[in-house]
Amino acid sequence: MKIFALNDLESMDDLVFKKLLTNISNEKQARIKKFARPDDAKRTLLADILVRSVVASELKVSNKTIEFNANKYGKPFLKGNFGLHFNVSHSENWVVCVVDDKPVGIDIEKIKPVELEIAARFFSDDEYKILMAKSPKDRQDFFFDLWTLKESYIKAVGEGLSLQLKSFTVSFLEKGEIAAKSGNKLTNWTLKQYYLDPKYKMAVCATHKAFPDNVVIKKLEDICSELNE
Image 1 (tube, rainbow, N blue to C red):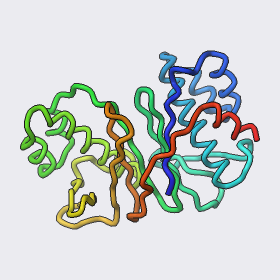
Image 2 (image 1 turned 120 degrees about the horizontal axis):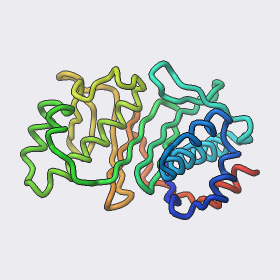
Image 3 (image 1 turned 90 degrees about the vertical axis):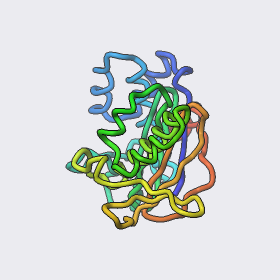
């Protein structure tokens, strides 16, 4: 498994945007051009570009040969049987990507004020109890711990909205390990948090415990070079 992150949204001017746009599929270009907000278009483009650069590097292939598809729940995958799984997420200035030889999920969220009634609606009873047992000043922070962990699990499983957030519980085990529990039984999925930025929460979910210690920070100019090799 490898995890990558990119934080170059603010440095992307119109010229760079238009140049990068030529590196993705015509279908994705059309979708991005429909975004009303420029920053949303930039984030979506950077996410696609980051994945393409990672796939090209890992498989030693040209970006022009890379094609994506999606399962019936909308989870994207690489066309062709290459044995490489990936997942991507973005929030504000950060775009992150994970690749592995087995299904994986990743989520990043910027910490911001949130109404905790959301937790009562979407978290399991056990998660909600743990959250509300925190001191008031720690609840917002822990809310995003749980949210990113749960989202990374849902994205790894790849069943979209058919898998409800309330249907499983994030369990904090001994020795700092984190797992997903369905009912009273632990699933085969393991989770890990990464502290990329003090203003953000980030989590990765996989079918094993072989997580890397660090996240590889990519630069936009390096990605551009990799795509044009």
